[in-house]
Image 1 (tube, rainbow, N blue to C red):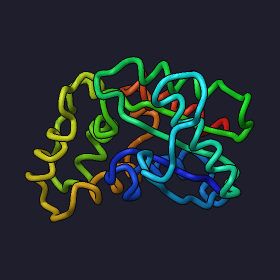
Image 2: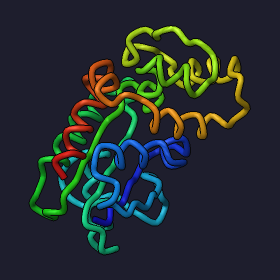
Image 3: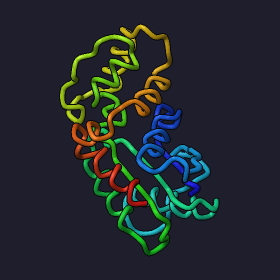
Length: 192
């Protein structure tokens, strides 16, 4: 299955989101390619609906045009609950494309998913790391991740830390600790 994985930030596109997708879906069956949600040459779908609804529909059309078998798209909620509503509507919309899809909204941001499993944090950072507060309620999860990385025994870029965490995290723990964002996304990837 050829899957186009589309996300906002470079941390997601540097391997972390693809690692989650590969672990949620049998990796032997997948060929993954990544792209950026906000490309200047990929314009929002013309028609009814709001911002991210139209953008997700446009990416569905683009994935089909590029001969992909499925689309994975993740954006950050960033404290804007309407984003979840828009992405949910695009997930259910099948009038312009029947392409299998797993559209998701990370609450508050994708970085929160990285804070869900303290055992993975301990392994990747090379030092004991306490359980973090409820990841979906942390106001600035990217800053928390950067602070944890600064105290690491390993020298790595934050995007490399995210990719390593996505490979090491217990997926059930991430689903349990990120029930509004990761859990529905994981269910959609598995169902693709």
